Length: 181
Length: 186
Image 1 (cartoon, chains in turn blue, yellow):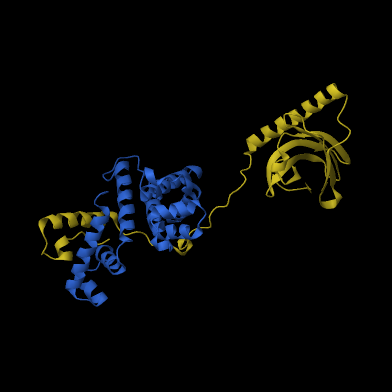
Image 2 (image 1 turned 180 degrees about the vertical axis):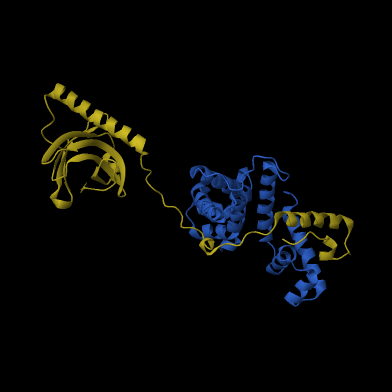
């Protein structure tokens, strides 16, 4: 079985047994998402990168405590990541740069921030299950600042194909996410 | 991040209302999530897995443990003298420890008692005046304290105790108090 074919749960179980390849694969799948959470929580990029390293060290150490019967692997990873980031802040006795200001301002509260972090975590992970041609198209459409016509030109494919693939990508995302989000 | 836009611009108009609603939800989630951050080169690969390590005593507990070991050693020798008139003259094992500058020590291990205490006597010479600690090691790391003693120069002989299962360790070292620097090793 190759690392790519293993589910997240299987990878965590294998990491618990000391499988370095499984660990590398988990890192490939989740490093950007962990860094995303750390950036949301900490704000400072350098410290967020340190927190990401700490998170994967924590995943390595605590993998043996993962119990697939008690929940989804992605939820477990999200919890480990969030706890590792918070523990890192406590250990260094550094306040989060992005901590809520003393004077209330309009914007998401702590619960909303957690919710947004979870949404980003699941959406980014779900994108990984899309075929490459659909994933790159979604990234260009939503975060690349390109119109569908510009994407068609950029990828040298008909505009109709861009729309068809976008629709297909959204359907796959719905299949992946609609029970959770 | 790009501006929010109408989903129909992205996927076309020919779509059933139910399906449109379903995809609209994904459309909103993508807008909400925003792009994942790019990884810097330092995060291109997984970090080296942390290796298993012997957790050292926190310094505050370390001194407490050393004090307890010293008290236990003195108590045991006191009881030994009272019961038998002195320590067993025949150690079950004698170890030699060596360090830089000709420093040496002889560590005499006497028979352990029923509780598992190993009375010892260490005779040290060649160490600079100061305070030292005797430790058991495991995997090259300081693992269990066996007491502290003072050296005023010349030769020093002191009773100590190892209240541990010695088979679980792989060596002995003497370090200056509060330091991990080995000045004597087996």
